[in-house]
Image (cartoon, rainbow, N blue to C red; front, side, top):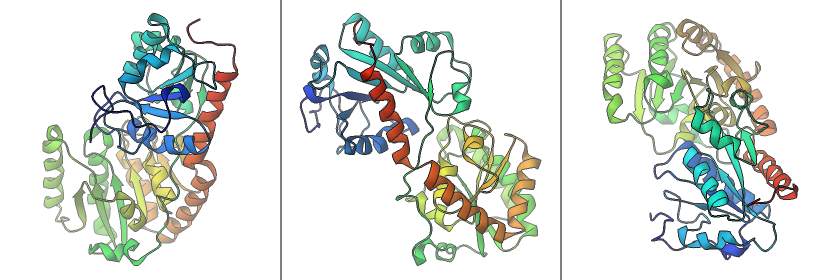
Length: 366
């Protein structure tokens, strides 16, 4: 797939003079930020907003512009007093600042922050030059020293849905047992994969009807970490019931097959996987990393302190011992996500921020 850089043609259905919002994506590899942009733009455009992406690593069918459109930023769009540059990374904020303050382009700058740590001085300097800021959780907002709006990420409740076909049943997996507990994400220490493995080594022998899986890629630098976990599993004699699936073609299918989903991360940016699991009608146990504690309610699952393996194991065991508790939590989670976390809600709330910027007295280049 070609990037939308200077060598690629613009793939936007209207001229740049019509474009109201630009969502830059200055990272070639797929990331959570990229996924957010890809999912939101079609919904935002369906609401009448003339928004496009800009940068490499984007799907060919996503409306976007290339760097050859840059001269158009010196002129106002037809229907707005300026364009909004919606950055989600430091380099994107910096590009917006250069275009607005150095090149004097007609832009207003917006930044979405997901980081849950004290920002470095340079990042704070960049953020102070934004016209508006969005935080993806109250926790991430607590590290900001500027006014901001909290808008949590949502999930596509049509793509992630409860079991609907025989293929969605755990029995279709070919794995032993009656119930499935799993976690998803890259295999590494920060994701708490070892905490999940150790809990399963202790619990699975006591609950023979359960099987555990881990889905997700292991990058080269974490191969040793994975192998050490495999060795632990082998010593416990659980190779058939505690399984690394690797990067599966469709993780959505595995959410539907799970009775319980575990998110054991030690640290996280936002962390969408519990929402995806709940949208699939699956009970959840999570750490309090990322925004997990802000998305999981008592009826939908259990939250434990990040890095606390005994607490994680105890929480998981309560569900393994009572599959009916999983079913009850799964139903509550589905209702919770559909009410509070549909992707359409996120798109609508961001649109409100855009409109507030357009309606304000702030004018690009002033």
